[in-house]
Image: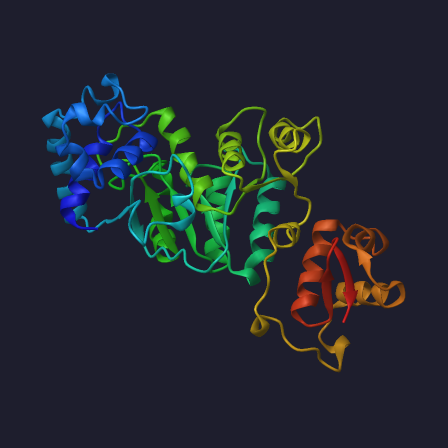
Length: 367
């Protein structure tokens, strides 16, 4: 994006009465952000949905002055900016009506040809939630997904750390400018995140902390991803907002169920109850529902001496399927006396070894 058009896009973005939806309408009508700010007011008023109140502050010189300062910061800090009409703007965000007209990035983010999922949840994540989140990301590693979250306490930082541990790309979506970090205690993880992905925001360097910023940030978390996963959530919370936004974008939403008596499971249970989310009981539910496929070179060929490569638990599953033919995941877990989530991981390992293969309907059989 040329700095001239970026300057005018920033000036337009700075107008408080003009949000992303209206800004895009104006730009698409006039042809560019520069053309919008050089157009006669009476011509802008002819655009459907554009009234005097919307453009009342549009030509205030303070917006261009602020844009100059922000452009200077962007250039000095070598921050990458992406305009919504640029080819390198995240493709999934282009399908979001309220996606930012300009986003800012640091790190080494590469969104091309990889599955992208968002993982969100309560800041007061339980030990059980941490274990599920870590196991989820570990089991999905063969599919090489990009893990997106909000870099906040609890679920967010658990997801980022698990992604780094498994050498997966991870993206932190921030509710403030790239000249600061919140919470400050997470500053120690910044280098690792930027080395394995990076940070994205549509907030400026002069943005102040505000609760609404976090809610606004959530549309980017949902918009970047093909699916949003809620690990744990109370009855109300930012993660439910993210899930609602993802649902409004017609993206898949997954929620981990919990006991009705658990306060941190109320939100997830409600998402499932009101049919806004798939019930997520096993990591393999995600590639199954999203139709992820492993590349041929990721799945080793079948070996003649199968048991040489199988551990005791894998042998148990193999022997059961050998006598029962194809079976459901839950049925395998029940008869092999193992938790479903653990059985799913075992089946994935066996699939990678070329021992079993998944079938439609969550069935598995020996190859």
